[in-house]
Image (tube, rainbow, N blue to C red; front, side, top):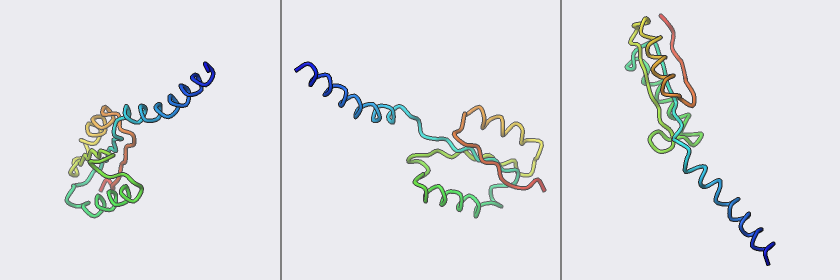
Amino acid sequence: MRRRNFIASLASMAVAWPVAARAQQQTPLVAFLNAQTAAGYTYLVAAFKRGLNETGFVEGQNVTIEFRWADRHFDRLPELAADLVRRQPTVLVGTGRGH
């Protein structure tokens, strides 16, 4: 009888463990950095979000996206990048051209 109880306990732990691990995970953070203006890249942001949605990531539901735009003030890029890195993103996306 003890063996049966032990096996049942192991089985219930194996089922409960992934559920508990998922509950402890935070929502993934995607950090997005661009040297240009947000207004000039609305099509890019829309496509980026659409791509995330197609892979199952929906902003505000199971992923958070932080955007930083330098507005062509290229000297701000290091500060903006450092801010995003401090937030410990799951992934940091850098796009745009410097001119």
